[in-house]
Image 1 (tube, rainbow, N blue to C red):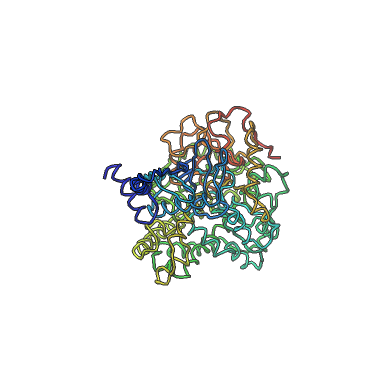
Image 2 (cartoon, one colour):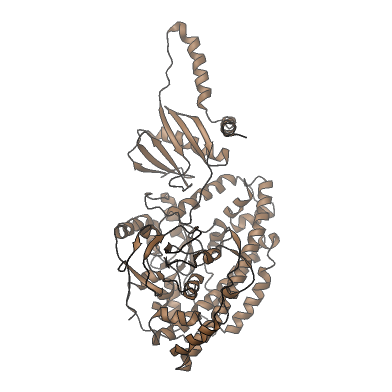
Length: 609
């Protein structure tokens, strides 16, 4: 079908839905004019021409409306607090605005695709003069500080209602290395259904943490950092360790506290116990299918995977603390740990089917790193390290970290298998949903929560779901535009837009940035924020985080500046093994470093002491 035929078929589809097409009313008026000639009553249609684009800066969670030089954006899926003025204000009354919104919302829903439209607004009637489908585009980082409040007021207050104690600090760093900036609705719904997912491991130690331990905020997964730090203090670890590993922004602002050691009498969970759980869950993860997902026992798998990750992080922090007490430079410590490993996921010589991130809607790819381990250089390196020539306690800490990293690799492979198999099963459920008319296409299954999918499978999902799915799809895209601080007090959750605005003002004209170096090698060069290039030679990558499946593409990068990368992440290990400078701790790094040249004094390392 050629382009003109496609446009005509779209108009016909809109016409059949009851929407008013401009050509139709013009023909009607011309007929009226013929009838009125003898009465000398000319008919003139007056109104405004409005250009509608189905996105704003390529974010398809918004419409952009243009009237002459006036531009404003419309929040898709929202019927109140939904207009944001960019340049000027249109001379439209409430009735005209509502008529416009009703028309463009309905047109996009009926067409089931984004539409570029020419609208003619006359009094309280709205006519479509032109409509053409637009292919949706995607970017790795959709955050946009040019949008004043990308969410409606009701959406800003929604997350706040999930937290019982407003004084707690929430942190996104704990899971940030594994998830995209904004997760699918299905993924966040699991965390919403399991708000105390971090608690079971401490319950087994007779430790009680406050609820909820995890909160989904605007499509992002935050942990209750206040509860986590209290727990760390109870088992003998200092809270500065959490911030050093998972919250570099906060760590850069606080003094270094005394480094303590884990009291295993308060945390008597053993490596072997956790290893047994991992073996069991590995078998379950490989057998996930649509029948498993439809049962409430499906929750058991993510709970146990999280328990294992929690154990690894606590023991990793403990051993890191022992090493940092003797050698405060974390870059030195991480080089010693990662470059002396016998095993690594990067040394595997077989292909792995992996998701970009541990989100159920993530794209999957075949990955083969097959990095060569130079054993001769390794032996030379080992001889120079004080870890292996001095106290046996330090040597033991490094060996413990190797064992924990081996478990992390096994956990990641198991979780990736769980995510890939669950995605296949969800797409089967999507076929079922499309066949029953509950969704338009199978990929919209990720916009239903677990309970809705369970009821879909058992044929008990009643009511209209397509409107709900459309709203959630638009909202997730608008979530992606939102600038969210990595740490935030619960009482500020309804005010994130203003907090972000203050941060933007602070960062916009900044020329020098305090950083925390995880692999401290000096680097200078041009910053690149596009994560899909073929060659990064002489480029410094600035990003929120990096997809696991594309790490190999960045091997020749001159440096990496990642917002919230952790010492336990694969991006960190990859940077260390490939001698790529790695820096963290800059909020909104790709937004404010984009296209700048990093020079000698652009990044400055805060003193470890």
